[in-house]
Length: 267
Image 1 (cartoon, rainbow, N blue to C red):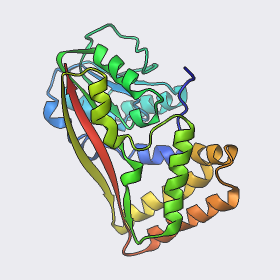
Image 2 (image 1 turned 120 degrees about the horizontal axis):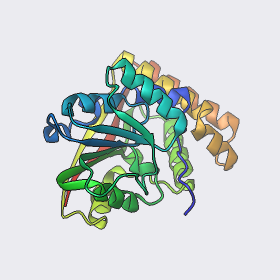
Image 3 (image 1 turned 180 degrees about the vertical axis):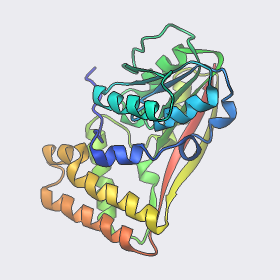
């Protein structure tokens, strides 16, 4: 199987959104499962802001953060050091072949990971392998086709269509949120508890942040590079999409909701 290609890459505009994530805004569905002393694996940890929060909640349990991108692991280590979570182990690892024995962790967590994989079911099978009996595998992913915004703008619809095309050209699934339940069942879990939640960006500050990072991402990140390389857009197209994001951010009526699917899996 060809290696998975991360649609977003690790441009600063991407990491700017990742470091915003916290346990409260990105893992609320998992929080009732957490208690001191549990061993936790965070797969696809990125810059590890979310890992740091989870580590606080399960301390003094063992916490391991893994990602397949060496460059972002340096960011993760800095984040954890700044948060005083130096006991967290940070490792490079392949989600399809994790370097841990069976039944190693009480909680296995993956945030915004499965949408970028060519074989999310195989990944879930591997997460299930390293989770102890009675433990939980938790996954949360956005659903791009279900995202909603106002004011309506045909250029933002073109942005979504382009993103979906780029992601699927990589063998990924941008509609992952709605598929998590099906994928978890196919991975063999005996019990799957599905849920959903949203990020909502509607204040002036949130609009400036969300619209600004996407205006930059669609012209400067790996998404832009891949769109150009695949012939799905030209530079003028990307600049028009960036302008649409800036228009949205400047509107006092601007509202954007990111729908996420979630699953807590056992057995």
